Image 1 (cartoon, rainbow, N blue to C red):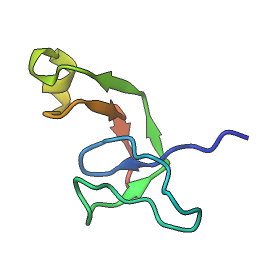
Image 2: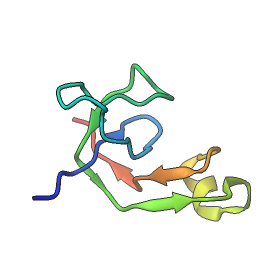
Image 3: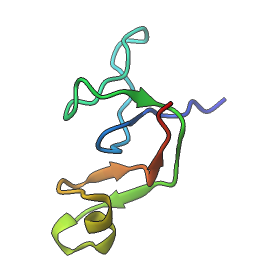
Image 4: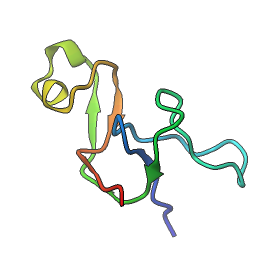
Length: 72
């Protein structure tokens, strides 16, 4: 069974798996932001300064991002 990764509710970054199994997922860029597995779409931004997608998502750092994150 494939485990759905977490995404940050503030910056939409796809988060790496926590190092310890019982540690909660947390965004290192937005530590107080909620995280969720309820997200859609996946995009990898390599050069945010040259990317139209990065501009629409307000992304300034390279990385993996969700296109839509649902926070309830």
